[in-house]
Image (tube, rainbow over all chains, first blue to last red; front, side):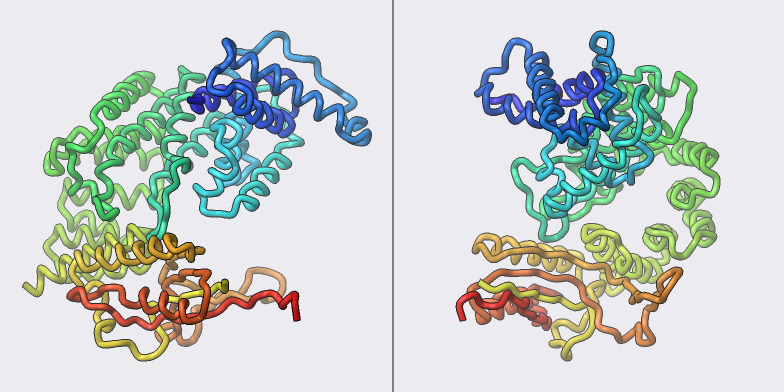
Length: 394
Length: 136
């Protein structure tokens, strides 16, 4: 059987070599895609002894062919051809170079995610289109517009790691949400959360000294470990407190905790490490009741220090305060937040329920359901309201 | 084959059947789960028959927007925000006949609600405009 994973792992490396030799990004990416198609056709189950070398040779030939056949006008524009790089760059550097190119701040997050999945993740345009529920032609256009945006940029040195972290974080977040009520899964559907983890792993390996890169990978693993418990057999959302913790992936949690500890000792605290620390404290509790909310609250305080006034952090912190200082203390904080803040009503409902105000909690859950951003959350919030209304009428 | 849009409403349309009067938060949590699962089943059955095109759920909230010259577009929730028609979502199907479209809409409308009883919810059925015939 043909090894798809091998090809996908090699994709960014081959692309990196071409770009390192001076090929412009869009043309190099096209050439690598051609080489991959060729590999699927020619290898026929057996990869050559040096698959990377094979792909580089074929892709480079394709790139040169494409450039030769380009119009004379285009050729005139390429009057300065850069010298080939002196020897192959290290693989790790290539990964960072490519990632920072795909996650360039000039691109919108949606475009950056799409381009990263295609150029570094090695997914097909059709797979990316399905992951975002848009027609393939729309996604193809989005990717080519992104490449055009980058066409004028120079990329001798890797760009900002922060921008890459942000894009991978959003990719993971996107993958965390389930399909809509009529969603259909296909065998080769892309798993965005798993892709984000794979890419975060590559990034962390290429910037071993970066505490936030390690922190982001830890954060992803510590959340991903709970995935099997997040929905029940019917596909309904199960809140953290009610999850079957025996379904959590303890090996993944262990890896996440190790990574996080390794990052924290570097004493370069950042938002991803803090969020990972909060996730780790949840993962560490054998039951919901044993959750160390005091420590979680301390981490939220740290997070708020990094971004004072961040309303989303303030809202999540109010939940922790509700557990440490009592629900009424949490509610006072929620009341000070913008009424339009997403999930504010849901948090208020949760705290009212803990305070014993069942009627108000039920009313607020129903209100929150009206503005729920996903069908899964809408269903969950309606069920919460229904559960409390039922309890009151019994 | 002809395409039809099946519209489900949060509010609006003809007077609802008695089974569809209770708000969802007055059902039991299990009834809510069963209702949502039924929607998925309808989509799966339509897929199985080769008739499914698309299905989406819409948020309750939404505004009206129009062109207003230079600057930000005017937005309104309408003077009748509490009574306006609110679409909850749609299914698009591609079927052999209008009869079959009605049958599919009726099936969708049989979704279970409170006490597991069919809601008999009104489903708006709208045929797509098609291309002009080649052979006249």
